[in-house]
Image (cartoon, rainbow, N blue to C red):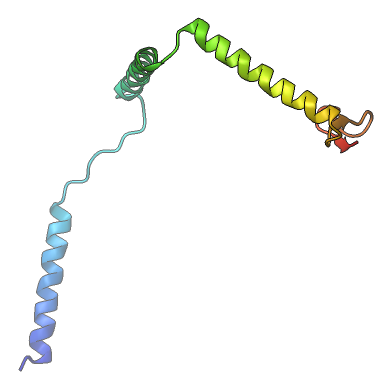
Length: 111
């Protein structure tokens, strides 16, 4: 059986060892200033390289030429315009701007 005195001696010795280890530990120098500007340069280079890689991948993976892509986009816009016009002529709900009420671009009421 361990006596209280032996237990106190063990705790005192562990505390002394921990204190010695902490005092021997080296604390790194922390400086606030402009000693190392390489971080922003590396970040900028990574950003530029990522943009270039993304552009190359987009060109290689795109299934349509520029003219075909513009034609498909125009077809989609025409389709949406046609649907919107049909909605307005078939008695559907349309939204009109309310002049003089709040912001002219954000205020709408049902007609």
